[in-house]
Image (cartoon, rainbow, N blue to C red; front, side, top):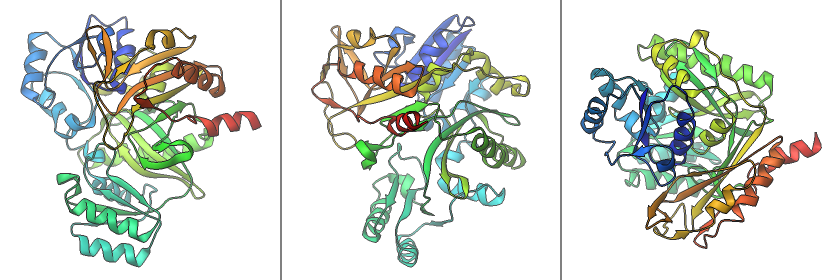
Length: 426
């Protein structure tokens, strides 16, 4: 099969690495890709926002399947356009992608189909939103309705923080994404990531994972796109797994079908394990980044048939197999992230780091110039370790981090810490 992968981040490097291992693969391209992806696929300079250019490339190169990595092209309807051109694509339609591109859409779906989530209200002007938070006080969660690259959510612990967040969103910080704001109840508990492949009718779960959103150790500092992840998480017991499938994932798939907007692709549920049971706090309509990296390391099955089964409505008789080993990834980011940061700084020691047993390095924001790897983004590298336990995976990942020579980068030093504590006390 000829496959085109769209995207340029760590998630796409992990997907390229996994797709490249498939015996079904004839040729793999990635648009636009990065320095790490170039080792797995042929990188092509296509603007993925230009759907016509993507379609022309697919036709010229007899592409059998397009795998869409990031959320923006999905929200812009690239799967619809590929489908109309007779090209098979893994990912949801534009209407179904509203599960991520509109927070209000998802909350309304939860209300309609009795999916457990926090109480909420939608607002299209700042005065009404301010009145609401003043009536409910903090802690409270303020979200831009649309896509804001993982940064449109403010967990306000004080009333002034909530007021500032509302002002920022309605002042246009996130452009059209902040034209409407969703204000939600603050949920207490442990946050986990839950993934399922969906074909419009059937959903099959992937392994559990846990992301670390805050930029600094001990979950301090501003939210980011994710500073590390590990899988499996000991906090998703078989009982909790069953509850998430029965109360959240399956009612969503059934609800979307009933509405006439069936969901195909990978559904990523951000779930809070509250004292009252699992509650949904957000949906994404693509693989998480960096959760994808640890999931690809643990997936034993060939991923290409899973993509095809999701596209073709054939998941009913499908199952995925997983390695028992744990996987953990540490994100190395440019100094200053998630604020302002420099591009073009040099990174050395990657080969030495990758030589450690059980270590795999996925590039997120890199470029290769004159044989040197340079940073080209905020989140730049995913240093992954596998092992029999989370502790072993963590040790290997940080051993690799310590071999990388990049003075202009940083990472959290506590990824997987809660799980390691759990293992130690178990």
